Image 1 (cartoon, rainbow, N blue to C red):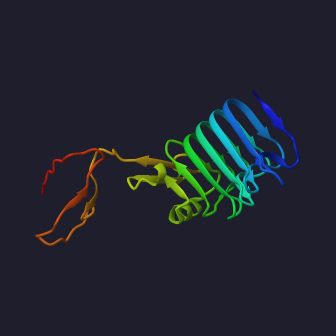
Image 2 (tube, rainbow, N blue to C red):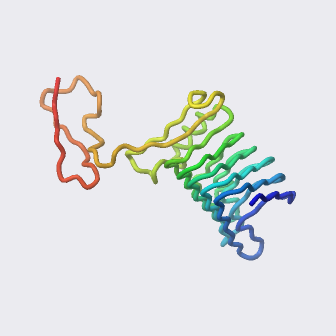
Length: 219
């Protein structure tokens, strides 16, 4: 069903003080609206906040979506469908002493601001989509270089695709793709390499489960 949250501090899952707090939201439909403050998960040591989302919509109307808030908290986001709209930033984690793992396996994470991914926070994209309402290519590339934005659990045959204004005018769109795992990969020399000696050793990494591969040479 639809839920309005008007608590000034926002909505917290796994939000503890002196005692541990463990909280989970399972969402498959409807709408959850946070009108004030952040949507936060995992604050304080031994506190765990989990969001399992397969459908519906979450609107964070005035603040950030924070997975792993601070002081040793942990957050997990398992998203296979639905949409999360964030008026502020994506924080994952908000501080280096908190940890989080966001699985974007479907659905859309739409962020109006930017994102801050700590070294203790991982955003893993498979079949989901992340968008920003401005040019955030530099932010996305920095997260990829830092290893905090990955695709398909860090599989070397996966890649992160990002563009500004191509998929959607005025927006940065981030998706992931992966090659056919049965095909050979990581060729040596790399594809398109020219000016090689006549006697050059060629090699490939085998596809998953492959016993052998056929190699065709042409000019």
